[in-house]
Image (cartoon, rainbow, N blue to C red; front, side, top):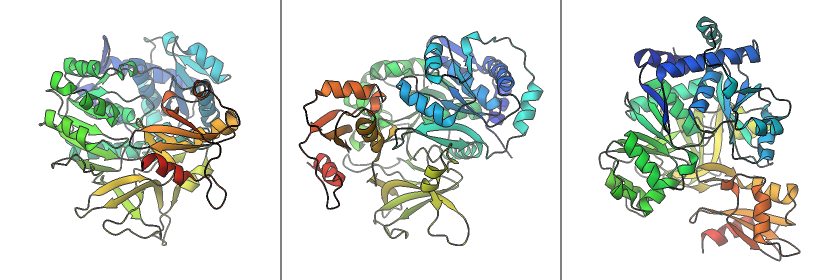
Length: 509
């Protein structure tokens, strides 16, 4: 029985020592070279963290060979990694560090001053000062790993929280192994895949790409964040490196389709296309399928609280442009419950909340038992013994084909540009922390994929001034795109802001 993801890596280092593991611009590293670096750093980390295991270690690095080394070394040291967004405002990073209290922060020369100014008393390991020739004891590292069970945590992925502090979702080894084994078998992942890695380090997709590197000896081609605005450059890089597999949020795929880039820059090596994180408009999807007729296309769905994804749909039939792409069927060892307003199983074509049970469930939110207890709850269909489910807040239904169809959000949690965002967090900071307006309401235009701020203010405030202040508190993807001042926000009968009215106003005009 496999207990941890490192067992994958050990096997493939022996099988493919000279295969390229990671390509980062002009730099690359083989599996054997990666193995030595990772174990050397892991040994250093165990000395810094002492005898303890299962401690969070933060990584404050750009997407690079260094970040891959850091994450794998943390796993080898029998601890759990937490990648931080280097572009996030200092206050947001500090909030995360205060909540998680990592044992160490790994960074480099370019970022160490910023980390010191943000982190204060946290211990820091500077990769650029790390001696790559440091000796290590493989026996010592393996003995530490032997202490772990498959339910021990692998990583923490931070997601938006309504109080202004992100929630740290804890995911374990077993759930990643479970998903990886299922994906290899069901979705036919090959032994020499070349991955076009576009997702930021803070995405769960990136963590799965690390699993593919370990489990199948896949090569990861790192696509830097600064290329996101240049889809043609991304495709040219993929063409040059003969990328065979991608797992992307659809945003950039829509841009590629709108710019007709696959006709100009063909990708004959691309055989597997996965997408998740938000709805992929079917018209633009059909463009991709038309230009890559031999590729397998898979729509995956799952919130961060589910390890990677819990449903999938292999698009193996023709879909009309106006027809939604199903999110499909449960992944293996995962059960999907669609509960109606009475907490009963919804009938065919009856809308209900998608809930999940199985090994894919996260362990909860780190250092946040109250939030964990609210989101991970007893299965209302089972009164016989404890059985935890996660209520996603997503509304879905099953069609006559037994396919699950996504409808939208139940509350104010959205997916925007692949990031999961709690709209209440933006409101909280704008009103209570920054005190920019007297009152406000954030809604999301699903058609235009735009965050909108409706607000009350006694005096007219220049939009540029509001944007500048918000930009100091949030990453770019959380900054509203439209600002609408109102003398008075609409209220419902209990005196609360009528969010539903504003939501309908922007989504049903």
